[in-house]
Length: 277
Image (cartoon, rainbow, N blue to C red; front, top):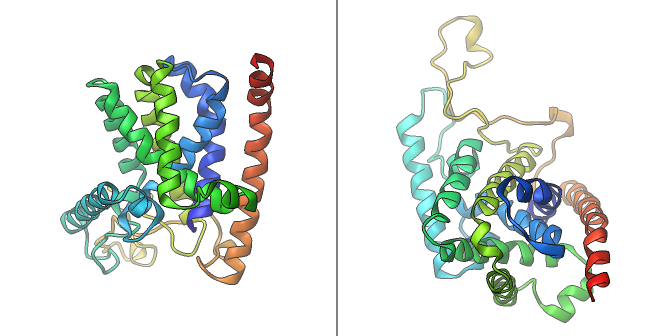
């Protein structure tokens, strides 16, 4: 799935879970909570592609996100070399490897939550770096007037808006309680990304680090097994090839449905803000 599809599905997931996560963590985002949750979910759903040079999340924060991406790629290659089995697919395991697994998503979410215990400044930095690619990707998928008026489909304006949002949360005092919220949102968004990729023909290694027997070899009882074999959430006939004409149409449809659903979820917050005004 391409960046727009990931961002829109992540935005819907973030909007749906913002209230629940806020209740569990005690985070108070105010009347704009659903919008913040949607933007955070959109950005989190792009993070797994830090393992690919030139992806939206990889370039969104300049040198900082490039360095994070290179670190993730090195970690993915190391994990693949250290845990691969004879029947695993060839390659270095960099793209759609470790960083696309649910284990990595949950681990990164926990790390973000733990870092928040050190200082809310770390939460603010994470929020900016996650929000920026989400804002950029959503702007490209949304109405044309957003791109024409705000130019937030470009990396620098998107980063500026992300900084403004983080600064507003900081000044309202909400940033202190947002550590676990951000961590949980990142984990959910990354898993949503993996689900999107596994709906395509590419798939992702859902079951890592567990060993799986090959379907053909299991009958003989002599299978060496694999850990990095990719799995899918759709039957083969329903999967699409990323970048193909039909794939673009499918993903555009998904984007529109998700954006309409997010807009509907935002209506109560919009009404509350109008009442406060």
